[in-house]
Length: 224
Image 1 (cartoon, one colour):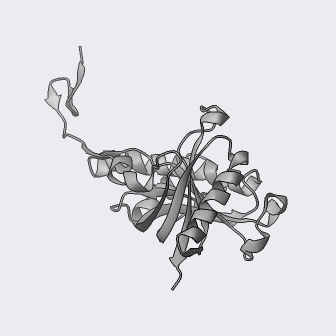
Image 2: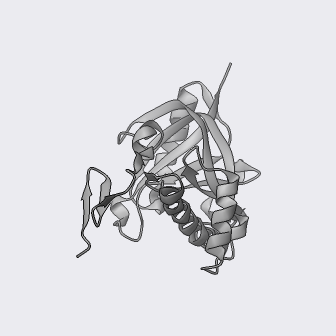
């Protein structure tokens, strides 16, 4: 009988010990940038991170955005599992994030979603390279038909000085939370700069709308 025993991250298969996987907890390591106490607003310096990123235009219900997500998550998981073998490292896939904007942000509203620009993204460990992503895209593309797969890039992106707040509830009800965030920014002697970011901390397919957690972040600049 071939017995598999898992103990303290060491796998013993048929009596032969395999290498211990190195665990990387990205959510814990970068907790400051992926959590916020309810009702609290923080202004903080967000460093540069690596992201798998796919960009397009239209609202969150547009075909382009949906197709981007259908390619992003399989690619992120493919890379994760390939790193278990290639680097003997294991990490959890980070949550989906999206940048939303228009060229003229004074016109940014739900009534003009078809004019929105977006970038859907998933943060990656710093050891992931463009070569790793290209190889993963080639491998995954042979298994699945994902039209937006080739549009995904590995990019370095930095929000810099930003204000963030946690919204709990349906995505459609974010308006008052965003207004509260913007008011705090102005009261703190700053002004809005850069692209509106949302970090979706739950899977909407498995979470009741009233329990959804969305970290909303807005880059800012200090007024002189």
